[in-house]
Length: 466
Image (tube, rainbow, N blue to C red; front, side):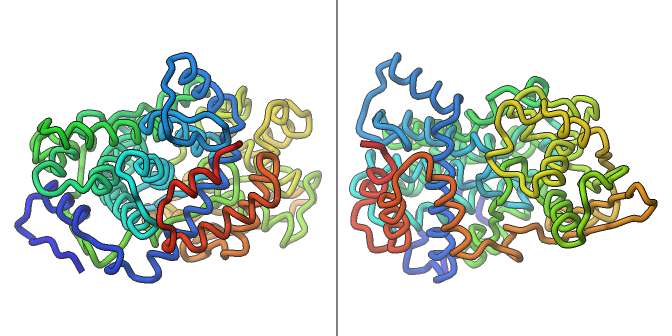
């Protein structure tokens, strides 16, 4: 495998790895994960293209006359590559069903796949093998940076790690697919570092800006590589420097996580997939509530109080302020409300995209159920974070009995994954409102044979509307 000397500077070491690793060096497991997650990208983005936030972006691009060769997924519109990836990243992130790395607490695929797909119109031809290798590289860069920042530290400073680390991941994907090596590749990362942004303030008002983050990170990464290709310089110590990314964006970074196992441990194989249409911190608690209802026979009307054990790192994201989380006013509020997630899981036995639509939070039975949900932190859960994202739920019933459910690996974690068949079912359910059955089958077949594709623009065409 590609090695990185221990004495190598961090930014330079990551750049060398990202430019040098070949498809032939990737384990079969990595190739399978890249295809599996590509199908998730396709399904979630097609569905996400129907949201108001995604449609607003397309309309803005039309008005600004950003037409070009690249497909905007789920539409007939084509834009310049950097703007197509902006639109596709936003659509992918809009319904909160995109993949996650637990340790880094970020969404790699939502940046990496839109970037790699758009780059096929910048650095043609891009075949399936090179697409897969670039995707694997992008996941590694983003996850390693997220782990080194330490998620709780990064969140405490008000940053969204998908956005900040995403600029680097997109730059690495773009630089690789442009064929950059050495100093230009390092400069691409250096330029990306000055574009690393993304505020968590969206939580205050349920704004759409979180959805904007991965799209803009992808856009920024493409431009970082384009500039570097023309000789525009970026700092070669952007990650490890005194005023670099780690020190500026974390109060207690761990640089040792950046090069550890580089080239031997591919982070794409450590990706969690979401079965529920909301924040990652809600996934485990929902599983616990579903177990109480479906596995232990809990009836919604029998619940006196439903207590949820939630990780401290996510408490202020999904559980506090308590009254605000019990009264979500927008879809974004609903996606980041654990009381809402627990309520719909309790009442309807699911937390799908059908529950995260206007009006559901105002239903009397949902409001009444949210009032019975109490969220608490638990040091025993925190002790396992971020390597594991455990959760528990405990229901006290009206007859005085108590039912409890615990989960160490929520459904969708690498240790408890969706099977390929379950992934195909997720894809089909999400895309049924957008594309016909025949097109669904074509996309599945194309993804399953992705390494044989001679030009990935064929995949982009399948994801666009006529």
